[in-house]
Image (cartoon, rainbow over the protein chains, first blue to last red):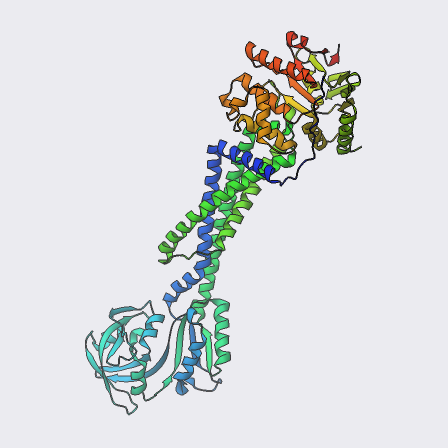
Length: 400
Length: 237
């Protein structure tokens, strides 16, 4: 009787190509054989990934978008001549060149609009009014919330048109299209302007008349002068403080201050929204983890006889753990990738609905979302894996 | 001696020990016992199986056949006595070491086949190779050919009859050329024709010099073995 040939061989590396191929085949077959259960796990992770990636995309864009939205409430930085406490800056004013130098310090991509202001009193046939000279394009950029009947004075060189506050127009009987002479007590020649727009803000602007800065300088006899400037910036809190400090450092002739009423609110609102999104993302992750855990637990329970057999024919606990975790990782990465795509679409919908703007693609969202999905899925797999390790082949392989 | 060292010694002995008259010991059970709480499932069982033997373990339900088979296949450990498998003392091995020795030394044939349902016949055979060393489709196919299942290599277990599934199970047990083939009621779920085919297959393996331990209720099957170990209430009788 011939002795059987011993084929006991040294065990090859766990990472040899042939072993990896067989492991991949085993995992692929196992996944495709559990279609409906895998579908539930993929669905849970996909939804989680979609929400997380959408919220992350919004989170990364929201600071800018929220700042832009909040800019509708007016300028958030004011530049005034630097003066000691006993000096009357309102009388002294500041050179336009200095104001422009200061505004140039502010990063162009953070500056939504800016304009110098020059104030004075003018007389109209019907009475007196506060005259405000400004660059009209800049004024419009920092005052998007103004309700204007008629139209804006659109060109900075337009000295023939003006805008009048609603209360002033009502009190003086001014209407759109009226032409009125403006006369200052500065010994300068009067100027005639046509009322192109009537402004309603509910604040001081309702009692003022707005003309181009050049016209105001001529009427008030203050050529090249302004009293202050305002800017609307995409920046909040500490960032706005830093920008103000930088301007003052480079242009010491001016005091620059964020307007806290708006800047600080920006930061607080953004903090609350960021916190809310983090909370929602956290809850979604927990729900996803629980759902995946339930699905994996059921999958492992269904496969107990197969796991028992695999152990009986030589699979170590490490092999079984590796198989379950790899299957989980594959599910998570496939679902996470699909969720990323869905999340990007969802982010566009939210961006349009809330900010009326498209949300940009941020590469960092990809590893972040996939990492969170993978982490949640592997966390969910801990208990099922323990269940798989505890399978006792002798118990599950009984023939009865 | 560490289990892997014992394996190395056993391999060396394989080469040296080839004379029929001095056949090497494959199983050496001495005073084997297994207790579950207060229940003694196996009591003081002693026997030896040598290379090329065909041993049938017989006895009524509850006599300890499955308990003994689990110990021989290293799926369980005895609570008393010693059990050498191909020269390696297995009674005191850790679970992890038992896994290593099992995949090297034992081929298992089950009553209910236990094929992975989502793997084809050849992939089921390759799975045993995968855990033992490395999966080789050609070798797995040859093993299926050996049991007359080459033409059904790519079929799923659900597409095979009971007899065909059992032959795939035998091919899987043979693929790593184990020192011992343990068959637990291998014809228990088969009709008469398939029972005959499977037993003929085991006979041919025995004639090739394979060492086979068969657990069965069936006296006719038991009669085919070289020797019979009868168990009653956990004791050899």
